[in-house]
Amino acid sequence: MPIEVALPGQTHADALAVPVARPLGGEGARIVDEKLGGRLAKLIESGEFRGDRGEALVLHVDGALDAPRVIAVGLGKREDVDLDALRTAGGAAAHELRRVGGTLCWLLDESLDVPVDRQAAALVEGTIIGGYSPGGWKTQEPEKRPKPVERIVLGHFESPELRTAAERASLLAERTNRARDLANMPPNELNPHTLGERAKELAREHEHLTCDVLATKELDELEMGALSAVGRGSRNEPRLIVLRYDPPDARDDVVLGLVGKSITFDTGGISLKSAPGMESMKGDMAGGAGTLHGIGAVAALGLPVRAIAVLAAAENMPGGDAFRPGDILRAANGKTIEIINTDAEGRLVLADALWYARREGATHILELSTLTGAMELALGDLYAGYFTNDDAWSDRIFHAGERSGDLAWRFPLHERYRRYIDSAFADMKNGSTLRQGSPALAAKFLEEFAGDGPWAHVDMAGPGFLERSRGDYLRVPGGTGYGVRLIAELAREL
Image 1 (cartoon, rainbow, N blue to C red):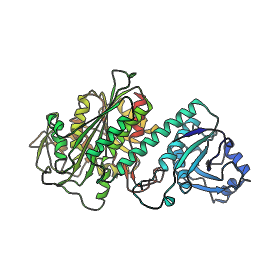
Image 2: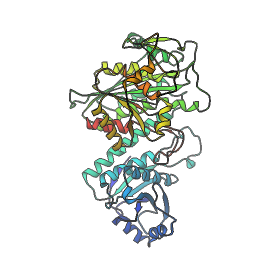
Image 3: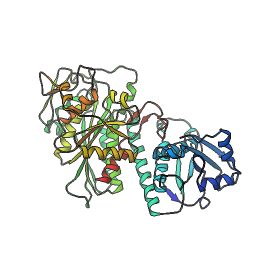
Image 4: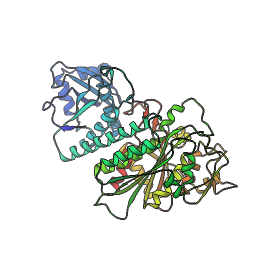
């Protein structure tokens, strides 16, 4: 999205957005309020506008300013203003402007504790992500469709730091929305093959990004019995989608490995899911979507770090050749797996993908997956839970999540959880009959295939695909693009 930095009055805008923290302050807000005859202050005094986080009010100003409307957007208490409050403000302003679209000018506030370059980045992210609409398949008349913000003006003095932060935020927000588009695609349009084609298209956009798609023959040659079994029941055969980013100025001792669960539709297989809510299982590839556009963002930013992304793509269907409870599979690393539930398929495809990423040289692995409903019960739709074998890698992930907005919280990976997946017949089983610790036992299962070196399993079942508005800048149901910003922030710090 085009970004301009200019003082208010130096450029035209369809709306001037004024962030309002309680108590009202900031030189810019004071000047705007003076030009409006004190209307903002009066609205706050009367309680008609409280300035709560995410609250927005549109005022038509009839020539008082160089924009026909002002959007007052609440940030909450001044001492509590953070990046999340600013992103939420961005989403609220984009929502209020959805009937007219056009250019939105943000008035930055130097009186806040958040530096103006970080303010700018958060407001840009919130505006672009918050203005997203999942209704790409609607056939309603064009005039009834939501109109996007087409240009963002940052009302402040120009500086290299401000522009760099805003343009980076714009790129990451747009890549996040591209990941959302993938997660929201209906399964009759997106399957393992078409996901591979999308990955090839992405690779063609960037000079140092390449893509290979491994089909049935190559999977058999690699003896990927776990991934192959999951996709066996569908006419849409599984794929292993591999993207490599190899910039010329990258260091040689670090390769960021990214692994994404890409189940383009999950019926549960023979262990069939119940019908209510099954339509949302098109989003079971949200981890793969974040992984794909995460490495795309790394390439677009030109970050000097080598990376490999591996998307394990399959459609889990109860066909005549589907794998069954009681089957014993052999994964690519040679370990055997007793199947007790075909709806625990994500960890199976990830097993072969993790092995492949490590074989191809990944030194640090981040794996993203919508894996367990129990993690969503534990953390809701805000945080992903993650498990890792390395404290330093854990710290990087946590702080990258805090900075990026893709929040993650560490869970324990105690050795005694391994007993949950002990099998009498094979090296392990893919689940447990006990209704205990399902995220932890899934992590212990995946650890068997992660190889040597730092590794983290991010269970993003809650924040990866929403059933309803989250009440912040993620205002609509469906894919969220979780992982894109996290990956970019991790790559920047490596």
